[in-house]
Picture 1 (cartoon, rainbow, N blue to C red):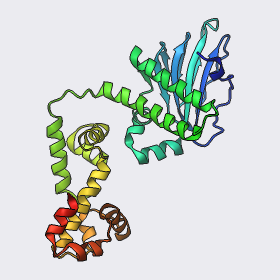
Picture 2 (picture 1 turned 90 degrees about the horizontal axis):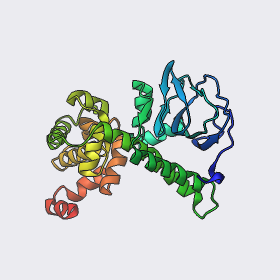
Picture 3 (picture 1 turned 60 degrees about the vertical axis):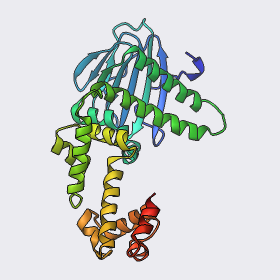
Picture 4 (picture 1 turned 180 degrees about the vertical axis):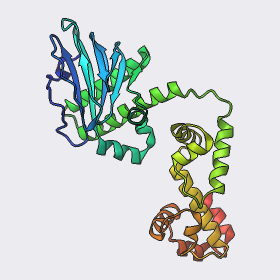
Length: 298
C-alpha cells in the first residue's frame, strides 16, 4: 500500500468539507474513539486488525473485507482488544446533502444508505473479488485526490460516483440475483399498470407496494430494459399521452391535468425538452399532418 495515500489519524468526528471526505488509516497501538454519532453517512471498509464494531448497541466482530455503513445519528465505536495487531481501514464520509443530490440523480446511488437508515443493515461481508474491487476503487480515488494531474477535480467527481455506485451494485446484485423467469412478465405488468394510471401519483414506493417487490429492483429492471429511469419512463408516457390528446383536439392548457402533471409550467418545460416545441406549437404544426409526426419519430 502506498504510504503517500495514508492519512494521519485524526480523532475529529465532523466533516470539514461540504460533500465527502475519504481516508486510509493504518495504525499500531491505536486508541479507539469512544461511542459517537455523526450527522453524515460513514462507509467503512475493514482491511486488517482485531476489531469489533459496536453499532446501535450491538457488537459486530469484523473480518477483513467487511463493509460497514453507519447512517447519521447512530451511535457506534470500535473495540480493539489487541492494539499490537496492525489496524487498517478505509473511511468514506458522505454528507446528507450530497446523498440527497445523488438520490435525485438516481436511487441506485443510495440503496445501501437507505438500507442502513431504514432497515438497520449496517454490515456486509464482501467476498475476495468484491473486496479487491472495492479496494482498487478506494485507492484510485485517493491517488486522484493526492495528484496534481490535469482534470483532477473532474476525475475525483467521477471516482466518487463510481465508488458509491459500485458498492451499491455489488451488494444489491448479491441480494437480488437476476435469475427469475418472471422478470419479463414483471416489466410488462409494470408497463401496463403505468399506462393505465398516468393520471395518478406514481412513485417507486407506490409501485413497490402494488407489485410486492423492492423499489430498487423495479428501478433496476427499467434501467436494464430501457436504459432510462422509471421516472423518465413515466414522464415520457405522460407526455406522449398529452401529445396524442392534443392532436385529437384537447386543449394544451388543460390536458396536462389529466395525465399526472401538477402544474402547467412543469408540463410545458418537459414537453418542450422532449419534442423541441411548446405544446401549442406542436399541436399547430402536427395536428393536421400525421405523416409528418411519423417522419419526425423515426
